[in-house]
Length: 95
Image 1: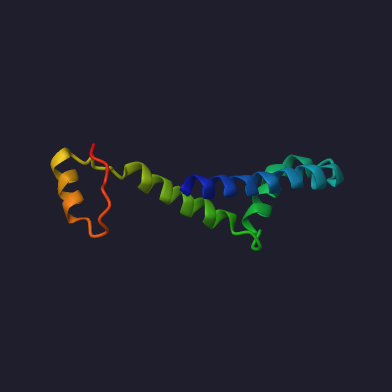
Image 2: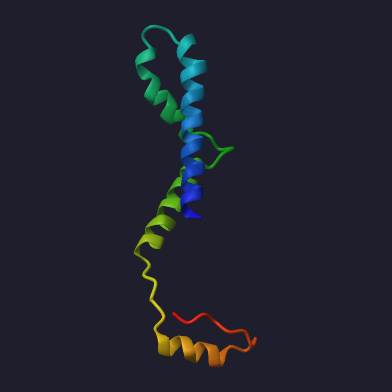
């Protein structure tokens, strides 16, 4: 989920940068063409219709949390205990 959110946010930022590059840059004057990256940053930060910056921050936090979370393996004794305690009556696979 965090990777999907991050990809969506990054795709949105890249779309805004491409839009500025294709629309604003050809119409810009000779002195203002050097400011394309400032223009792109301003367009991304002020895009209130698409909350890309909070989306990137949130997905980055989720991605870091997911990366540091450790999954504990189930040993044979705890798997058999889970099979006995299962209230649905279905068998869980033993590892």
